[in-house]
Image 1 (tube, rainbow, N blue to C red):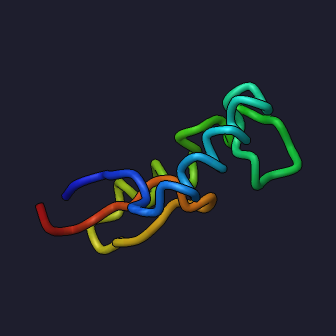
Image 2 (image 1 turned 90 degrees about the horizontal axis):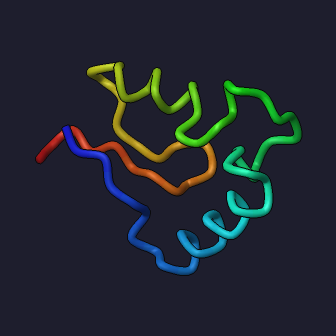
Length: 67
């Protein structure tokens, strides 16, 4: 398993700017709760799932099953 940034530099830049503007909370969510603090609980749960491969909600990170 490997966690890496989205290969699209424009997407990474956009999401990182959003994170900066929201104080580290997912820019794709309206609520500002600890659950949505980057790296969000949803993606941490997906990381723990041995079958999950894919992007986090805001498309910043990607979990790959292969190394």
